[in-house]
Image (cartoon, rainbow, N blue to C red; front, side, top):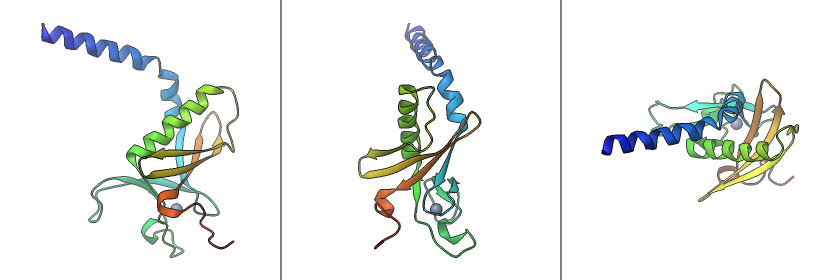
Length: 144
Ligand SMILES: [Zn+2]
């Protein structure tokens, strides 16, 4: 009895997620970029190092690996990564045929505040520029 009830529950869930097939296609096209540089730098997942226990997204300048010696503090944990993409889906669902290039929004979750800018929007690729305001403040150019 329990088993069949569980199965029914699972079936219900999978039929709900199939409504989002189109969104899954969008998800595959999304790449996130670090807005802390003149040319936004791709952010990749960082994990399994001596210092890092919980994986997160950062650009190549994190820990000074960009070649210019600068250390970039911009980073994004996996929950916030998911959050900014869900919020992008909302935006996309409101105006499914619009070119969203240049659109900006802010994502909030508990103490985190993340600024997002759509820097590229095409059939092949969607690039979301990200600035973690909680870590970096509202502007990287202090005093200007
Ligand atoms: Zn960076």
